Image 1 (cartoon, rainbow, N blue to C red):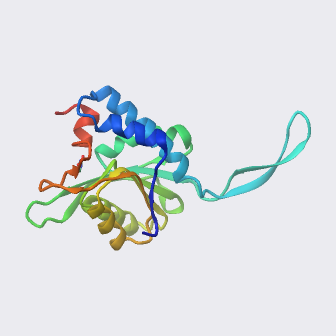
Image 2 (image 1 turned 90 degrees about the vertical axis):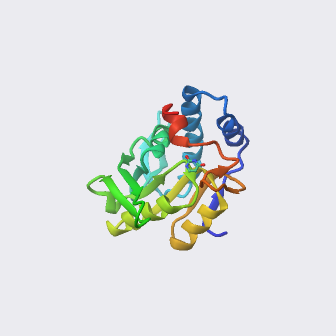
Image 3 (image 1 turned 120 degrees about the vertical axis):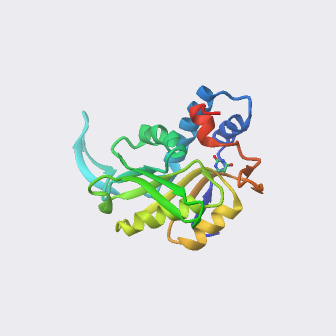
Length: 209
Ligand code: URA
């Protein structure tokens, strides 16, 4: 599928296997999420434009490359997306961080935004939207729609584990948004959990269950 990138790096796969294990405790789970996010940041930023500047090394004048153009904003979807922020910031410390929170109205089944705080200049930034689990895709689709309503035109979606249903939903609704995931799992179960997945990422990150 065009615009969908699934990572197969051995280090990423190894760490995800540790995250899946139900015996992995909160502290280790959080550390692993950070490590996987850090490794993913490397790939997700592969297409950042560069420009040439002149610098003096101790030996000679060099034409050297630095990152050019638009800057980045990370936007975790609350709450599990928070677990991916530190790893990403390790590699892109110049990024600003916004937050978006959505819940599903049980009557209308529509997503309701309960919180959104974005950097002032977010329209001119490349936005990396973060959520470790792309399950049904409902929150990812709505989060992207909310960002687009605010005139944000450059959005990438980054998750750790994706279900085929979520990829299909997000990709068909927002085909312009590249999807990066570290693993694509088999399916969703009747409770919309990813199978085999890793359980509830928020609970595992924050120790709430
Ligand atoms: N959200 C999670 O945290 N886990 C799933 O399996 C699906 C959605």
